[in-house]
Image (cartoon, rainbow, N blue to C red; front, side, top):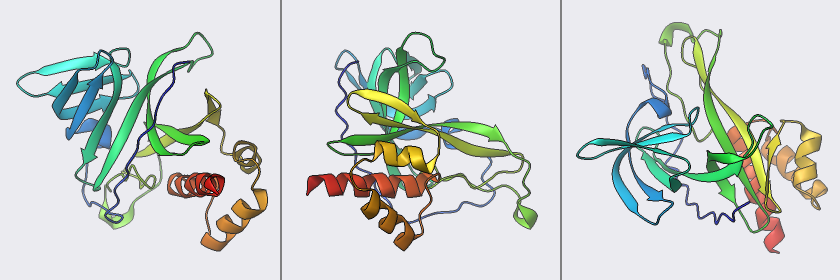
Length: 212
């Protein structure tokens, strides 16, 4: 597996809820940059499609690139106020041979990185009188009427990408050596092992412990 150097700067300006927002983050254009596998850099408006591992660039015209042509890309999500970074990494989604696919990097350190892939899932929960709600890709789903933004999570450790099945015992198997410290950190901050924003904080804390 090729080596991936994760350089990530997530900028948070607070949790923003957008009322009457009818589109998911993958359905709108974002300002950003695409870094090609051949070393070229493209800047403009970007739209991504993780289901098909495609990224589109709109400048003078619209061009479509596959994960095989891209090293990484970054977008500035103007709705939620943060920089999001995606890398093309080889992985087998269906148990077959590995192919380049896009992963979003949530947080990374010297020992481990937390990755994810978002998708749109159906949801039957009602949003009450407010109707559709915006999706926050940083902290997790707030449901739209009939649909919600969902995530699959992965850990990149020892040169391998492994899917996380949202079991607390499995989390400790990835974040080894600091069970007591992590347990205390989770209880003190009321963090869950299966929520996006909480997983980000837990993994970032683990990487901080490994620096000491």
